[in-house]
Amino acid sequence: MASGLRQGNRALVSPPRVASSPFKELARRGLLALLLLLLSTMIVWLDSDAYSDNVANDGVSLIDALYYSTVTVTTTGYGDITPVAPHARLINAIVITPLRISFLVLLVGTTIEVLANEGSRAIRDGRWRRRMRNHIVVIGYGTKGRSAVNTLRRQGEQADRIVVIDGKESAIADANFDGLAAFLGDATRRDLLRRAEVPKAREVVICLDRDDAAILATLTVRQLNPSANVVVAVREHQNVPLVKQSGATSVVTSSETVGRLLGLSAIGPDLGAIIQDMLTGGEGLEVHQRQAEPQEVGQSPSAVVGEKVIGIIRNDTLRRFYDSTVARIETGDQLIVIRRAAPADPNVTKRLDD
View 1 (cartoon, rainbow, N blue to C red):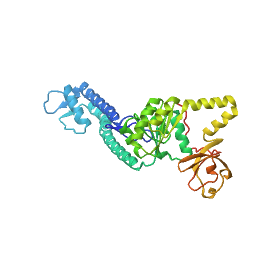
View 2: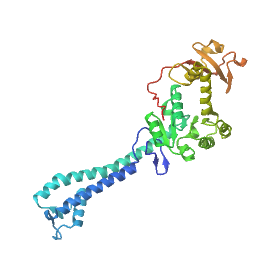
View 3: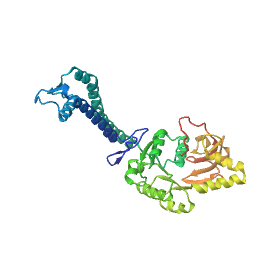
View 4: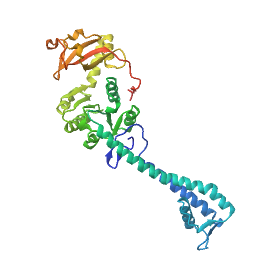
């Protein structure tokens, strides 16, 4: 629920595209309604000689004009002050009446709309959180975060099982545009992580711009969810031990990875191109992890057709293709393969620019 990202002090999930806070919108429209009331008051006061006070018979003052406009635009209409001149009645018909209608639409209609929308938002937020189990939380939706989400979706993860947390409204808007639910706020806050159902998440991907923030977020996530797979991106290699001690399952050093790719490209441009090809989804080659098929059980990894097996995960342990203990594929094995990239899903938006 979009930029209505908070109700009171509670953060709400943000499905795509919401404008400003509903309470700010209500205040804005209330101000417009007040301006309409003042406009009506000035019209009556400046033409006070055309109106009659049927009670006091002392003329129409500024306060009387305000009183008349108030009871008129609210459709109360006591009738103690009335327009008597023909032009005043004409002005009431073609000017005051539209002002009255606009006033009611702005004030009464908007109030009902805000109350209905906020109630609906709270209900939708509660339903969303109740069904969030074994989902993926992505903390940070910059270039790395969007790339991670696009890769997850190409690997078959559904958009409604991915939740984004970011501290920038522009990033939340990007996530909403890409069809993802999102929360705006500080990812180190326990209350925000709880509302994103981090304690029930299967995977947490942390890709923040600063290593110190990534470490603190990792500590907080691990305290809330001791069993989730937590993947963290850091910029500097020397921070890897700190992140692992904080509870990360695996750590990716972005600057070192880019540096290694640059070095490989310097050694041989084609070598660098192949590595980059495998890391880029949607075309050429791609690295994929999948469950071993029943017909593959008992075969040698080299006998798998259409893919090259480079690793097998057995009993939660990664074994390379040259390991003699994985000479045959067994039931329950997870295969890490290099394969031809599947055609890109047109519904998966690639937005990798900052």
